[in-house]
Amino acid sequence: MKKFIEYFTDEHLALLRSQLLFSGLNDHEIFMFIQYSQPFYANIRDGKSIRIAGEYSHMTGVMISGSAHLYTVDYEGNKTLLKSIGSADSGTIYSMFDYYNSLLELTANEDSELILIPPEKIFIAEEKLATIQQKIVVNMIASQRQAFLDLSEHISCLSQRNIRDKILKFLKIHCEREHSYSFTVPFSREELANYLAVDRASLSRSLGELKSEGILDFRKNRFTILKTNIFKYE
Image (tube, rainbow, N blue to C red; front, side):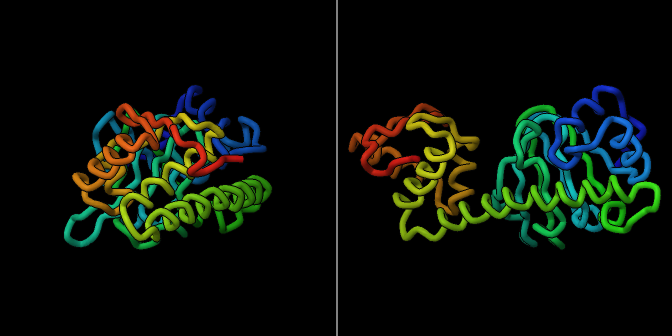
């Protein structure tokens, strides 16, 4: 991977300013940290993928523009969808603590930019940047709340006994998150089947049954809950 500092522009500074990891830092402090930490940089085109392994899998990643799906890849090449990450939400940070020693794959949903920060540049104090590093560590801890919430939601879906219940649990989570009975999910059918660990044909069949029973309606990845008594959002 290439060094971020070689591609760094004023536009990147504006993007970093909006990221949770750099919350509470001014432009000068952000630039000082980028100069010191020398993050690695990847520009991922829409629909393309990159794999992150070895020393890079230990680093803290920040999606500074665009959005992507994050997968783990096993030794046989099978992929498991973990989450959708995007520059516009609080899930932009994924930490080395979450996926240590895993082979990761990022597939871009649009043209996207990613930086990878070596852990020692965050956790080993440098005298002139100690205050900046302290703020970044606090921001990383705050970001883990969302990471744990995402993981808990994923486990709660996977723990359901059948495909129908997995679908309803997944939709209930998004219903509560959006505070609406009509919402868009970030996955295609194939991606949703991967996320729920079910066969795509079985997923489509179960969705069709729920639709024919008048429980929900959908068009592509836009869902509307019709029988709202099934679950309530607060």
